[in-house]
Figure 1 (cartoon, rainbow, N blue to C red):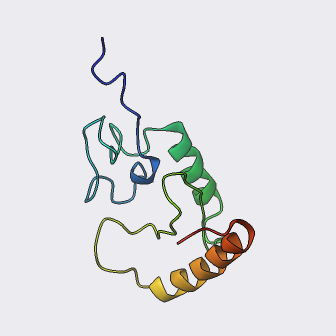
Figure 2 (figure 1 turned 135 degrees about the vertical axis):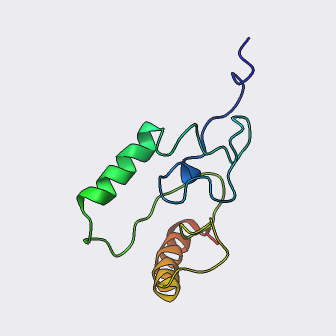
Figure 3 (figure 1 turned 90 degrees about the vertical axis):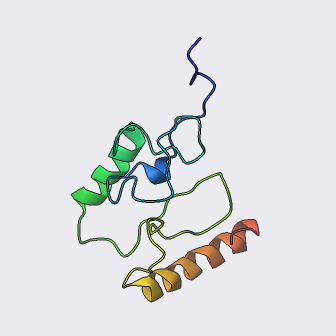
Length: 108
């Protein structure tokens, strides 16, 4: 039996090329934070990256939904230092989370 057969798989949040495996990710396939065997190894990650790159400069914000928790998290988990546009990201995230709360009553 394959020892990783019961593992859940790649955490797509950690599979993007930018700052891959810098911090907060694991290379162990059965860990919750498994970043995959290489950057953008997963078809889902490739599709999202391609969609963003194909419209470079046309984005205010990019938003994906995840079932792991009801949180808004900016894509900046590889360092404790906030991005230069943190205030803008926070303001946009507040608008989005307020809208989600209005419909579903959840989101942190």
